[in-house]
Amino acid sequence: MARVCVVCGKGTQTKNNVSHANNKSKKRVFPNLQRVDAKIFGQTFSIMVCTRCLKSGRIEKAATTKTVL
Image (cartoon, rainbow, N blue to C red; front, top):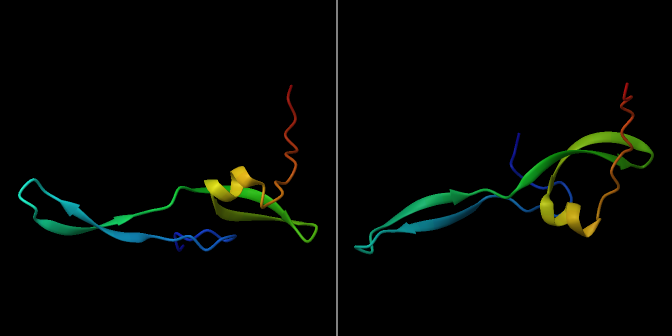
């Protein structure tokens, strides 16, 4: 599964690790993705969404139907 937000398309970035001696080596930085049950067109899907999209309310979370005893 790709590490990409379904809503905004945010994905991995390539950056440099820079040592004290100014040696550079590549590193990958991953977005903070969460698996969420979302309601899309009246149906519930399990999708990967970044936390920025969750916080801004770009998706509608599906209601949880857990029973508490």
